Image (cartoon, rainbow, N blue to C red; front, top):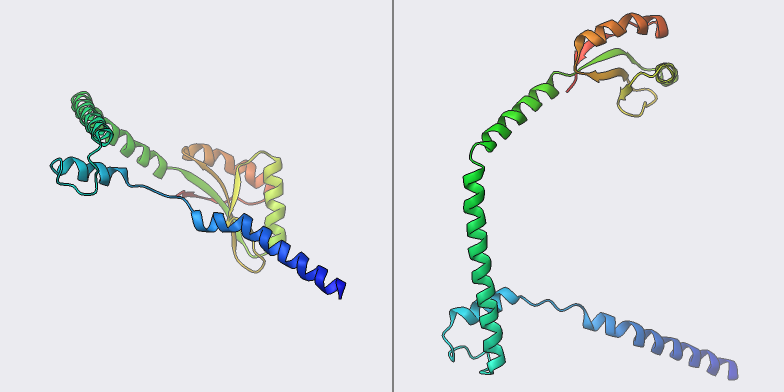
Length: 184
């Protein structure tokens, strides 16, 4: 009988401890206040007409501080916006030109496709040889899958001539000539 009583007492003690620890956390939560809607409703309504705001002088002082802060912030942001638009009228067009040039440069990169292989062991062997010779090699798909076609690519490089000059060395190293293709 004593052991049943002790187990029940222990169970009740554990439940009380868990309740003490977790109930405040569950019931309290984080309170979020929407200060902007309160300040806007106080500012838009005439004094004395808003029943939700008490007539304490401290509330009025706080609302006037909020009002003056918002007015100063709006003045500063308008002045900064005017200054920034005056100073930056020509650079946006330059930025657009630069981005278009960058896009055209990115589109003109080339790669050498050495081949498309179905044998995963052969793909790994060729990649190992090329990486030991300091070539920038990647495959499509990125991880060779057994039974699926894997393309071995070298590059990308913006210079097509540089890739052309690499082809004889690649043939000597791996025995594959490859084709030069655009990289997207």
